[in-house]
Amino acid sequence: MTFNLLQRNKQSIIYGVSLAGLLLLLKWLEWHFVIINNAVELYTGGIAIVFTALGIWLATKLTGPKLKTVVVEKEVFANPNFTFNRDVADKLRLSNRELEVLQLIANGLSNRQIADRLFVSLNTIKTHTSNLFLKLEVERRTQAIEKAKRLHLIP
Image (cartoon, rainbow, N blue to C red; front, side, top):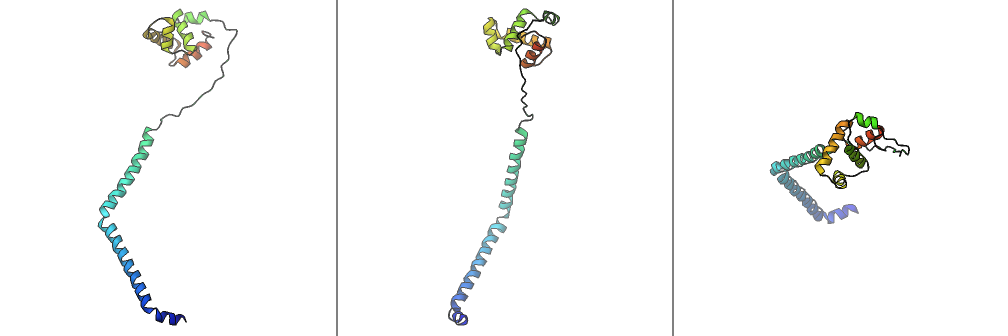
């Protein structure tokens, strides 16, 4: 039965197989044309993609943060029995105005706000602040506050 079916459709089968072969040949020629004849463009495009990816990766590494931020939480206790240590203030040669500026820094005021409150210029407050930093041997406002509390200069 299958042999009889093959005999009747022999011409259609040959036609179908020859079309499949022709299609295979055309696809091979298309691949040959695209890949072989455009090899320079394909290689150039591939190299461009690789260098673009490398550039993006390198840029993220170079522009990323160099240091990781570490948040340190400290408990702060208000000292109700605070007594001002005049000896330490005299030893450090802190003026009354510098002590006043130190207290306002501890209250969280900015240089501009301190200048407005004390009716002086911003440069005067910056001078007082830098003198405080030198005398307390610190580099930042938070360090100055912490050291002043330790030395009983501010509550």
